[in-house]
Image 1 (spheres, rainbow, N blue to C red):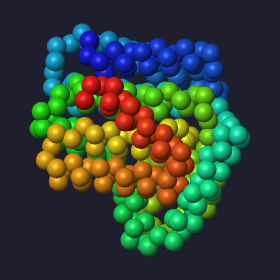
Image 2: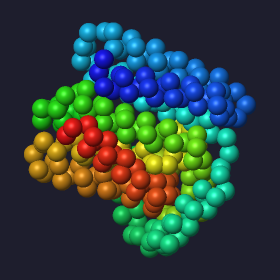
Image 3: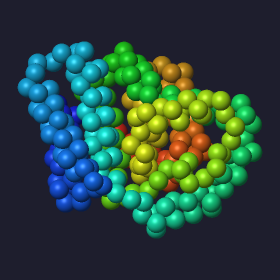
Length: 256
């Protein structure tokens, strides 16, 4: 069994136990349990199969990632006032909204594009990493474990994203695209730590064997993704900071 398959199985067992213990809104427990069962079956089926590159490198891990995301999202009950107060208070200390409001329109557009750029960044990083000699199994171990930590905190640390509580931070044409993507596929709750920021950094860490111009570009992209998440008010600053910490720890523990 590959590490990412074993880790996925552990996560979905955790999801099932959490759903039984904590529950959620009406109908949430069955949805979370269904996701847990689906994730366990998919992890087990993947482990029993011989290596099929198109499946094990490109299809099954992303399906597990999305199953985990929507499964934990079902366990959102209600925002925790103290959590939101602390997260917003830290942002106020850093003057996040004030900085965002003063950013030039061009920078705002770049950061909005970078925020949605995390979605193609994962397959791009995988392609670069494979070309540089990394294994697909290691890449997905880092990405999935990083996201599982972020998603796994949601049942216990519940808050709304800052965009749901505040006015628009800046003017941006691309923002409408991001909001439409979120309206279509987001769970509607804030994840602490930020999976967005964590994934961006994980992608950069995975390509460190590539030529240095590519490495620099990927780290710049990771910074832009995190900045877009925070200044665009999709996430709080603490979300992004802890997301980076999670990605760094997972990458370091993975043996690379």
